[in-house]
Length: 221
Image (cartoon, rainbow, N blue to C red; front, side, top):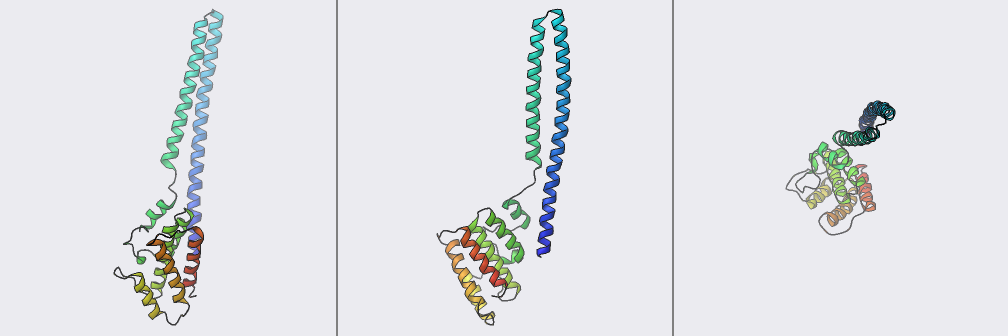
């Protein structure tokens, strides 16, 4: 699974890199074209200026200069608007919301069960949330990852009607051969309920400690 995650991350980086390169090529082509137009315009204006000076027409000379400045401002404004629209319309989706859409379940929804994603799916989502500073949601995602792992080992059974204490009791019955497993799960359950259902503060260090306990559960403590 670690190999698959590396391949997936490399693929995502490749897509972003190609997108940035395409935007850069497009911007360079647009700039070259616009500079060509401006160069032609300047040459035409100065040719007209020399003609007007020779004929003694100062009004036409001033009009040509004013027209040049107006056209330059219009072209530069149009270029800026164009590049802004391209960037907004084509930049790749990033961040936790895009990851949640790709994975499916909304970790903030109380009705979401641990069996709606595999263990590694919950873990990836938890890490994304942790990086975004969503510590409360990250803790729940790590908790669901631990439940998914225990279910995979047939130490608990996931069901909508079961409470967290039901999972604790079930783990005590089925996991009696692994004596250190239940205390670690209980510690995490106590932290999770204080944060998720209570008003206790949560920070990065607490979530990282919680995640370390989840790793102990996965390793069989």
